[in-house]
Amino acid sequence: MPLHPRRVFSGTRLPSRPIVRIIVLCLGLALFGHLAANWDMGRILAIAESHGALGSAQERLQAWAQLLQNSSRQPEQQQLETVNRFFNQQLEFRDDLSVWGVVDYWATPVEALTKGAGDCEDFALAKYFSLRQMGVPAERLRITYVKSLKLNQAHMVLSYYISDSSDPLILDNLIGQILPASQRHDLLPVYAFNAEGLFLIDPFTSAITRGDPKQLSRWQGVLKKMRSEGFNIGEG
Image (tube, rainbow, N blue to C red):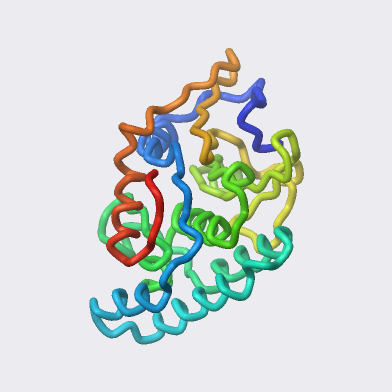
C-alpha cells in the first residue's frame, strides 16, 4: 500500500496505543528547517574526537564525510541508493535501551556512526539529513512511521517522492533494496511528515491533524545536539 499522507487507509484499524504514543513523541519532527549548504566536516570530526578516542568510529565518520562530498552531484536516484546502502552497512540495528540505556533516544548521524548502531529512527534520520545535505529538496523526503506487519511492531522508514502524487520509494533498514511503497505489502502506513508539516490521518474520516512546530521538543532536541556537534543548520 503506498505510503501517501493524503490517502485514506480504509478498512484498517486505528493505531494501537503504543504506536499512538510513538506518534505523539514524534511531533518534534513537524517542520524541518533549511540545512546550510556547507557543513565544516573537519570541525565536526574534531568535536566528535574531543569527547574521547573514536577508534573504528573515526573511519565511519570520515567515510560519511567523503560520501557527502562525492555524492552531491549524483542524480537523485543514485544518491538514494548510495545513502541507503551506506547506513544499512555502517550501522548495526540495536534498540535504544541497549545502545543508550533509555527506552527512546533520537540520535544524530554523528552519534549513530560513533556507536556504529541505532534503531529504525536513527537509520531514517541519518538518511534524511544526508540526502538533504546532498541537495535533495525537503518536499521529496518524508519520514514515515509504519507498522511492520511481519514484526508486528512500529517501524520508521524514509519515503522519497519524485512528485507529490507519486508512489514513493522506501528507504528501509529491514531490506537493502529500495522498492516502491506499492510493493511493500509488509508495511502499514500510520503517519508521515516532511519539511512542510506532519500529517496524522484518521482512516475513517480522512481528517488530517497537523502539529504545532513550537511544541515539538524532540525535534528541537535533535537540532540542538547537531549544532553542538558543529553542524551549521537552520531553525527547525
